[in-house]
Length: 192
Image 1 (cartoon, rainbow, N blue to C red):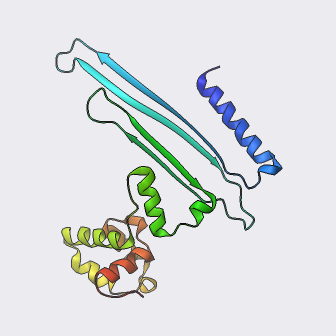
Image 2 (image 1 turned 30 degrees about the vertical axis):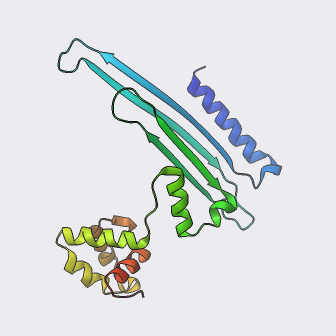
Image 3 (image 1 turned 90 degrees about the vertical axis):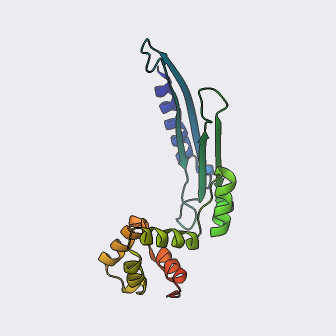
């Protein structure tokens, strides 16, 4: 039996046990595996005599049964893989998991601090996102259009205007009422 088949059987068993044990109703079950590989190939080709490939494969599964109020357990997960330039040297793999009340109780600033602590990257604030969106629109020559559309409150914008705002700011489908309000604030138009 191959290693992949054994992993699949272990994962299926883990899921069946987690779902079938009544005492584990409120438990969050987290399963993670990682595989690293390094391939070095030498060839007689003088333009590329040595080639290499560094790979990492990760599989994560979370079983989070619903809480008493019907919502799933809260979870923040982070994975970071780093390799300095060059063929040899240390590989840095960092992974973290925050669950339950520790994840639920975090406000936006707390989420950003946790993300920075576990991944080295922070979640931008809406003010930072607004600045980025405004800069993107202005750099592409859409500053006037952004100001014209941002003058309207979110609920007053037709779907086409919302889509256009997503395009000119670079947020696409992620442009929402919170980003819109932050852009209005940054432009001095005030919140709705």
